[in-house]
Amino acid sequence: MEFTRRGWMGGGMALGAQTAAAKPPNIVFLISDDHTAADLGCYGNAHVRTPNLDKLAADGVRFAKCFVSSPQCSPNRSSLFTGCAPHTTSTSRLHTPMPPWEPTFLEQLKERGYFTGGFRKVHQGNEFNSRFDFYSANKNTRFEAFFDKLPAGKPFFLHVGFTDPHRPYTKGAATPPHDPAKVRLPPFLPDSPEVREDLALYHDFISRMDSECGTLLRLLEARGLTGNTVVFFTGDNGMPFPGAKGTCYDPGIHVPLIVKWPGVTKPGTVKHELIGHVDLPATWVEIAGASVSRKMQGKSMLGLLRGGQYQAREAVFSERNWHDNFDPIRAVRTERYKLIFNAAPHFPYRPAWDLEGSPSWRSYQDMSRRGALRPHHLRLLQPARATVEMYDLANDPDEFNNIAADPAHAAAKQDLLKRLSDWMHQTYDYLPPAFAGPGEPRGRGWPVSL
Image 1 (cartoon, helix red, strand yellow):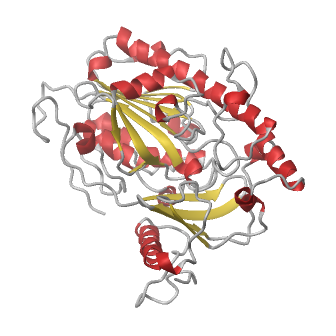
Image 2 (cartoon, helix red, strand yellow):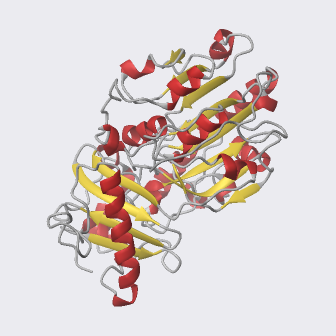
Image 3 (cartoon, helix red, strand yellow):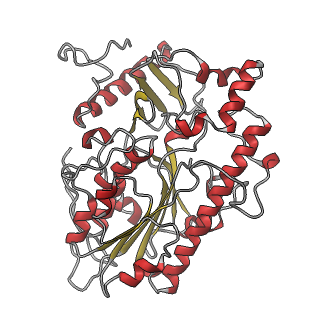
């Protein structure tokens, strides 16, 4: 896809009319680790304490429908640097370092005079960390260290990769701790004391991360940087619980996205457009006044943030590959429907290693042995899966009823299969596409029936 982009617009200037006197805004990017969108106060979870991020949303714009490129950590994070699907850049396998030949938005921002910095988890390999002008992996390094190195008068991009709320969980992350009896139980998880305790600890770790966000946001204010700084907050993939992280169900790919840009974003706004994580690098490049590279597959949100013209996405895409087990999955999601293509349907659901030993998964299995699970929870325990899963999100937001074989949705299924297959072709996926349409070359797709 070819993109036509022009530069940043400041004040009353038109796009492309940035003057030498106009300093482009600073950009701060905050990213949590294993965090589903629903688990913030501003997203409706009254149980979890996130006052700093709730205030950020109240002062900025909250995106209701932001989705990751992959429900896995390093693959999705690679798309946040390249603006490409993980398979395009050979980073679809967990822990694969970013290839040194792959360009990222960092280089484009540096060309625009930005000083770039990173804290903590970047997860693109040690060599990649040297692409930042400043980098510290040490959790004890104070945020002030970056600003002390910042050259006077230079705009900056700062990446802060929190490791919360990733497992393992221990008590003491938040005071007072969250109450298991009051936790909001997601419908895809069974109700047991173990699951509730596990969720309460997850909320503790979210609360600790929120506190650190507050520390940085107050530092920006103390240094007089708030007025010309755009702050983005999101999560790298869904919560580390069965049926979420590592899956292409919404709890695995739906993450928070909050943006505050003083004088640009309208406080307290909620946007419902579909957003993909591949869209963020394109947005940062345009904010900096550069043009989005032709290789980037994302769609800049600059017009949406400014309240101007913006052609909304019709669909977002996600992929799952090797984590600590191989499970190739591709998914396409529109406003109403989700289609999941399981390329290895003979595999049962296998949780990632950090979930496998969790109290929630052990409780899940124990309740199954006792016959205490509800019918919709049993899908994670089946010996195999359907090649194609399809869900009507308007009527089944929890994705419990697979309608792939329902003739009433055949036209929608064909549309989704074509969208997914076209995307796989256009982004150079190593998997054969999910569907070969009429008149297309033999061998183009898998034997998926309509």
